Length: 162
Length: 357
Image 1 (cartoon, each protein chain N blue to C red):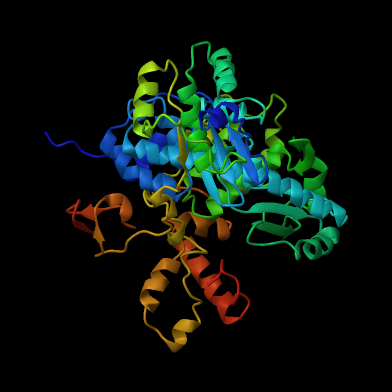
Image 2 (tube, rainbow over the protein chains, first blue to last red; image 1 turned 45 degrees about the vertical axis):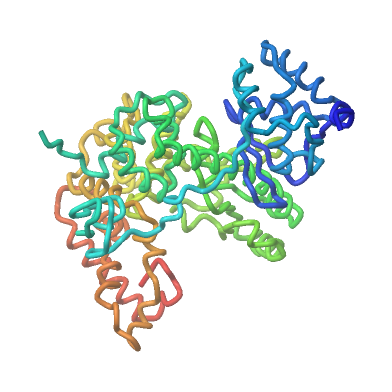
């Protein structure tokens, strides 16, 4: 198992993605699965180096150059695990660790040792309030004035719109 | 001691002050104020700008700020998706022998430090009257669930100037290696101003657009061209810029509109702030018209409510009645506008027009 892991060279998925680079993170929209992801700087760096040639060890070395600080291979595996789950690698799964250590333990270990932020890949979801196209009429229940057409919620947080 | 909370419209204005700049001023806001206005910012498409302001404040890690950040991320991604869509739409139009002018949303967004700060839904393309038919035919085969495109036959819905005149002043810019025509900056600003007022000035984002356009103008910006020859319409434009100045801090120093920007009709200021305190798209036409008025003849339930919703906003009524922005009461314009819409309805002109009755 370890040997498979040692030779595993992940490749970043390119097809069907829209990529937007921001100052501190990379946003990815998966046009095939209609899902949006946010990669923090560390996850984005790992993803950038997933060229199908570099192993996790080589990616860790490349990261060390980018970040100017020692980077453990565990941190790369942590990123690869999240990238694979988000379908941002051409491989659906990555070889599991043969050591039997849990993911939580890996995060703890990496967190203690890492001089750079832990890699994080999160889903982007629309803020609930962004879908509000209408407000509440007079007499309707409200928890804040912003919900009311009148702009006044009497008795908030459990009041009625004026 | 009980703290007196500022009206919601004022808090919205405070959050968006200078938000179109790369380095906006420091935001001073209490957490509960931010909690209160965040839904309004999100509802009117200003969530990303809210994040732009709050990201350097001590509230940046608050749950509400993170909601705004999500909006920023989503809009940033949407802008990237739109960009690839625009390139495709340009190709479709050009293959049909029609050259579009890209207006409204995208053209406004390009003046922000990041395109994602200014979300837009439709991609608005204007065509010369002679090529509109070809373009419309070419776009018929498009997947409308994927491409939200709004085609315009000329510019008559946007401005009084002729298509030829607007085209002669238009400019070519580049979107990721693809050239596209946009309106000249002076025409663009004038259209943004009148559009905002014609729609009751309810969306604060429009005034951020105006502020961004005013502050990004070049040395050679031609104010005469922007304001146009009609003194009344020039005054509307100056008032719209004035609202952006007074509420959002747009710089108007040493411009011809500065005196007017500092002295706006009190009703205009009051009404705009009132509208900003509930900037919900569903409160304004066309979304506020839930069903055609003629259907109430058969089933009058809800008629009173819909008539109240259709009572003209004073800003919109003044513009539609071509009225001046002075201190006189707006009721005559509102009555006049309501009357003209009733007449148009009775004549049957407006039955399918969501902007009418």
